[in-house]
Image (cartoon, rainbow, N blue to C red; front, top):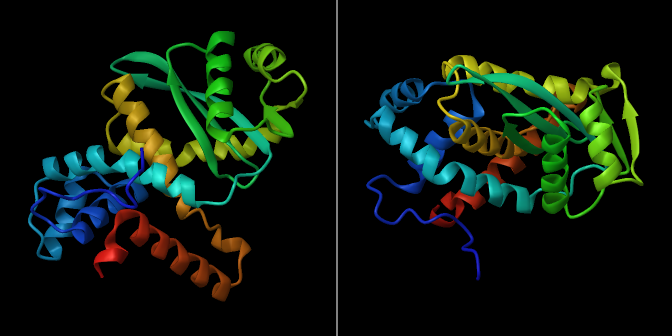
Length: 237
C-alpha cells in the first residue's frame, strides 16, 4: 500500500496552512487547547478549542510518522529511563528512549515497572529502529538488565544514574505539558499525545547553544521547510 506524500485535508473547512499551524503550536509549545484557540483568534481565525483538539488527534501522530521517515538515522547509543505519571489517580510509568543527541526514539506508557515492561519497550524499539544499539545506558533498575539479557545479550550495558542525564532531561518538556493539561485522562490519551509530541519535536531539536547563529538559522529554516512538506503546505504554496 502506497502512503500519500502528505495528509488529506478533504472535508475540512479550513485550509492546510491553518490546520498544520494549529497542530504545530499545540505540540511544539506548552500551550493548552484554549491558548491555541486564542492565538488563532488573534490572527482572525475563529475556531473552537474542541476543533483544535480534533485536529491534534487526527493529524498529530500521522505527521510525527512522516517526520520520522525523513529525519537521519538516530545515534547508536540508547539512553533509557522511566518516570512515574499519575493517570486517573493511578500510578503509571512513562518509559522513554533517546539517543546520544537527545532525539526521542520511542515513548511507552505502561502500568508496570518490571522485567516484562522493560522487555516490551526493548522489543518496540528494535522493531522501530530495525537495529540494535552499540551501547545501552540506564539507571540501576534491575528490570533493564534482566530484559537486555534476553532481548539484546550482546549489547554493552552501562548502569549508572549519572550517565543517564540525557534521558532524564528529555522528560522535562512532557512534564511541563502534563502540568498544562492538568494530567492525562487515560493511558491511551497519554500514549497518543506523547508519541506525537516526541516525534514532532524531534524535527525542531536543533540545540542552538551548540551552533553558530548562521548555522542555527539555516537548520531552523530547513526544519520549517520539512514541516511544510510533510504537512502538505509546501505543495499548496
